[in-house]
Length: 61
Image: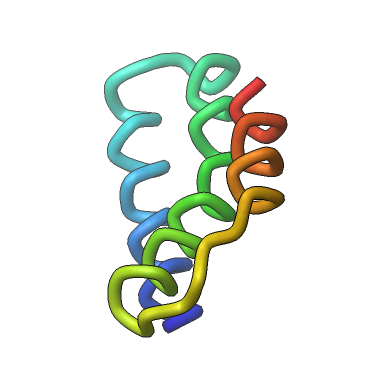
């Protein structure tokens, strides 16, 4: 699961980097944690608690 999340995030980061400058792309690189959390919830059936949502908001903020 971690390998798939990391590969997807790296691929998306490279794609975004080809479309915009690095300073704006780095904001999207921080979303890897949220992608991993969503993958765990969708594919492994893990529970997403309130503190996961709060952490996600803090990462995006």
